[in-house]
Length: 591
Image 1: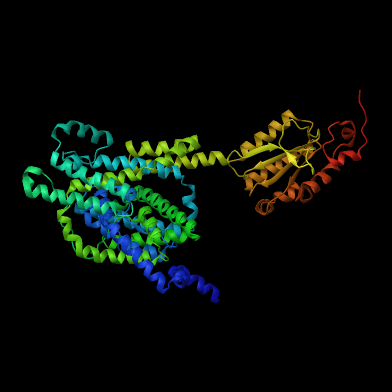
Image 2: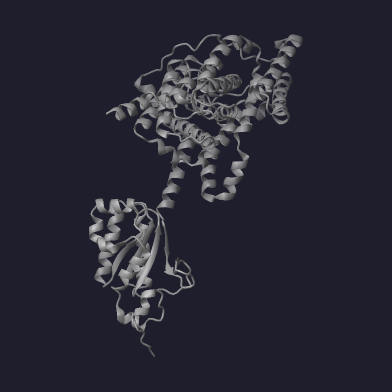
């Protein structure tokens, strides 16, 4: 009774699982890691909110309460949640159809979307669907983020060069509008953007330990202030972000109207899939380095609670951030308290420095976002996928071009569906190979060498893959082909160590094959049956139909028993003699 109560307590308050890791030393390192993360998220939060079409302060709010809740109710020691580039651009793509970015209606939709994403995430976690993200190919993430990077850069062309470009258009519309506006490029704005961009590149290359985004932002801001003071904003046209509210995140409320929920349902599901994939993959990646086993279901719940909380504290969709999580780990974080410190300290920092955003030029933000966009494109991983697999290349290409030319949620669904289809195609064609004893080996180990002779009465097959409704057609075709090519081999032995389970349809195929071979004077045998396969065959009654005496746990025992059932008159005339038992039958020479 006490054990059950403890398990329930740990599920409701998962932070009790790691409280023993908290020491005076860990508190110091977690505080410093949290302070570093809070400083880094300051420019990122403003940048991501700009990408999402939200007022800049909402990017900071998304890194406060959601980060704290996700840390306390998630499972990873190092994962830091908050606004991310991918989530931000999906939010913009999903909501700009219904409202003008930056408006009150748009913000209300973003809060509603955040709440819906949180509810779906919690529902998946409670339903123990943590393994769901395993079915989303890594190529989907690589392709989507590369496409999103190009979209981010394209949407900042107007701020980078100081030209008017209509909102809401697709990539080709944006590029065509920019082409027409090339003669109107504002030199002052472009210089500020270029200085920001180049200073960020220089710091990242020659002083990688310094916060390059903050330094680049300061460089652009100083230049923008100088140019505006010297020539006047009427001449330069250098507009600024404007002062941010120096307050804690205000309370907010999503729109719970049925029409809004209906309109956002598809987008909420797409954002959820991508957000969970991002969070769990980052958590597992860092868990491999730290030796921690991530609970995917608990991480779903933690992410869900963080987004529900964020929707009531002026935050939009939050998920795991690779940059901030990696920085958190490198900074020496020991427990999730580092993420709690990061969210808490960000509140203090915002109160102190938010008014300074009045000096931050939009052009500098554009330069920052160009840096962010470039960093999103994983050229090394793209080259690896291109070389490694045509299927994964296809998945990546579909998601990439879908992100560029379709709605982003459509691109995500297309990539996920294609990866699932290709996965099902792969598992629906289990590997089926013939096996024969190799007399050249000391213990006559089984081999797949096609030049080795086969027994004229017994064929041995190995199946690597589970027997379920999607794979039985391929297995039936292999059985039919074997019967057509070798009708004299009436006995069939299946090496089953590669079969994890069989559903009712898969078990039925084995039963039918057993009856068919018995009708021809042979039989069906199973060798090396795993526990999962045994239990599934026993549960559906197929094991009784096949015959428990036809199931063997070793090849030696199987060959010994099967040999007793072979036609000895055929054995006497056989010159193959591939089994040791064959020596017990005198050979009759034939003309």
